[in-house]
Image (tube, rainbow, N blue to C red; front, side, top):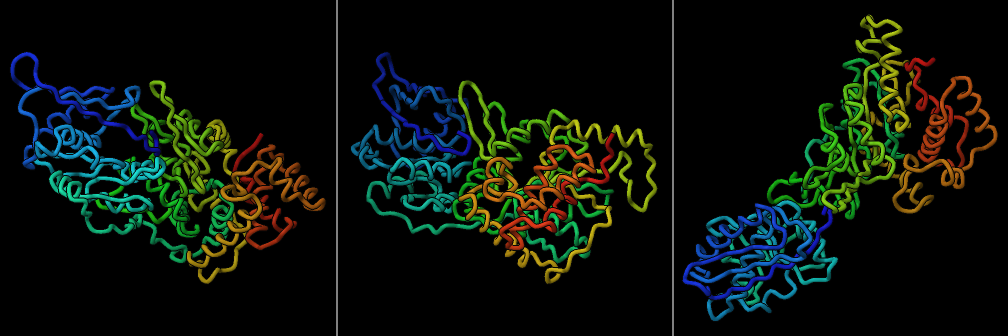
Length: 503
């Protein structure tokens, strides 16, 4: 259910046929077609491994609870073990007590080969939460299961290899937790020359969990910089790694044999993405792109090309940090807390306003373009708005802007915020009232300076909140207890977008 496991019980009864010979095989308990087909796979797998399967009679399988719809092939292995336990050791099967405390999952081939399935780490975590003994699974997902400590693991490559350890009590070798480094995070800020003002803004965004909107002509480095953001964020804790691995596992993104995801994800959906693919959903609810970017970065390139209806589905997850999907009376929750959502857009319809290439757009066209962007309904969710073509002040080089150095500065800011709010919240996720104002009220001179500047610019109320949050993060980066005027001045540059026409 989403990224949480539900343990189901597979019961099997084998009865003699009351009318003539033959074999009947029934599976009940609200199974989908993939579960019903287990009748073919289980029978063939059992016989290929020289294990007993009745030649005639009625094999009745019930999967509880019967009000929960079951889908996928993860029930192949437990159904086969239930059939063997029902026949008992006298017929060459299993004692039912040999299965006490074990939770099994896995797909069976017709020859009895045992394969992994999506969500292995989710199943293992459910076993631990239920206080049960351990997991019976395919060897190819044992490394993923091993990420959950405190449970036993019995794994094998075939059904026959599972049965023998159950009979003898001898376990297979110990499995060490495996690490799966997500690809693409070898990118370093030091590889990008120049752009010191833009890099400074992204450091602030990473330090406070702020969303960023980059506005600039094609080729101004928006995508290049966004892809390097995960590299300046602190390493994920074990709990965060497990949560991200759960998401990737149920989505089928983990390669066979992979273990724990170590690096923060970076997701960049195309502007043609559907609403359900962006936030999650479907007839069988699956995580969307915002969930796949959990604890990482969601990059929305060419924001102006996204349909309004698609972007507006992001508003609730951006505010609540989760996605709630209701299907057939069942409610599924997906975590959806990217550290930062980064958007990029052009400054005008032709894209060359403010660049060396002459802009061909009229003032009316530019105003209509920005009216449409404002109508998307999420511009107020970006605390930092960065005009890539503006001549912003240059910032000193941080040892050539190495990501390893920047990560330490961001880590210090995260520690300060954790001490202020407790575990979890960050400046970019907090409402100004009451948390920020209670923890960090503005000095009178700083407050007056902010109001005068925003009044002169005619900025909306949302800019007040953004400037406050961003200024608090800049102060945290400097280790300052109070927000000073220089912190607010820098925050106001980020929170107001000069290239956006008003009036």
